[in-house]
Length: 386
Ligand code: NDP
Ligand code: MG
Image 1: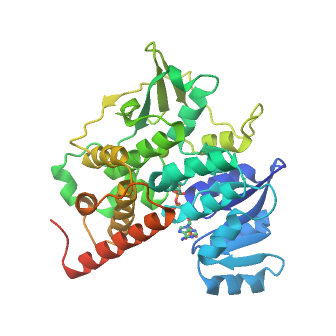
Image 2: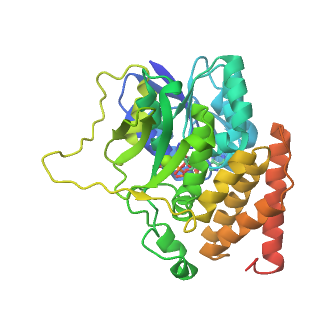
């Protein structure tokens, strides 16, 4: 039986992890961490009976303690760290959103736990440090993100030296059929309508701006130790091909499935053995099906272009890109800025940043916080950069 510590249990990925492990004797939930969704947390405690629960606010911990006297409640940043490293030999599923996932990942690596990573921001902001630590502590980091999980599966039994390039597919997000001019008038409600996937708010906006693909390019760089020249993207509106590996001879391996995050989650949970997966969701091969691929237009999606730039430059720049995006998306979700302001904010933040090579975790945390504060204040002073 595998014991799981699940961060972000109330989120889109977290809930799907819980679906897979419910009534499944192969798994048990050891600890969970959540933010502010206390109603759903009550539900999860009743069904999965974790021994430890971390919430964001102290008040919520006190309230829940009275309702569930047999459960340990902790809170805040310290609580998140306790939940990630709770118990002996638990695996960590990191499905919180944003770079708040970084420190718990590091704590779990140092505790020699296997980590199933949905939280891509961790690798974007501190990929080099994470990779060094994974080596030093001899732990395993498995990707849940569907594209990276697909590439991981394609690479099984093959060598990195055989790879010509990896091809990350992108659905194009909510606005894939709009011109850049039309983007000036789009609303939050429209941006939250992803054509193929039902996901948390932040990643859904990231898909519409193509920042998600930018983050994924950097995530792939660190996960598979490939230079940016060997990482490419292609538009694939059906989200059936989850990504591809092109080998040196020109042949291509791809992973196809329904767009259903339970499949990569289940694969990672059972890895390395998955001979009789309880959850199945098959493609119907008796029906006709068309799959389309279009070259990525980096002028249409400048934030993907910028991601390649900050990725290649390295240092603190990926963290600047990520922090400015986190703050911009949060302002957009509060209806405080327009959709195109997100782009303006990120371009402005990266353009003004002084790069610092080999940043420490403190450098990354401090500069991310400083950038977020500055964007918030600038926004309050005058309405944006346009
Ligand atoms: P959601 O917004 O649906 O869920 C986020 C989770 O994180 C919630 O449980 C939330 O708690 C919790 N959370 C947020 N802030 C904190 C905090 N400070 N402390 C503790 N918990 C916190 O996000 P998703 O599930 O969509 O995404 C999670 C991660 O997985 C992201 O990094 C995303 O990029 C990645 N990912 C997601 C995919 C998807 O299909 N959704 C696909 C591939 C990757 P609460 O709700 O209780 O406040
Ligand atoms: Mg993805």
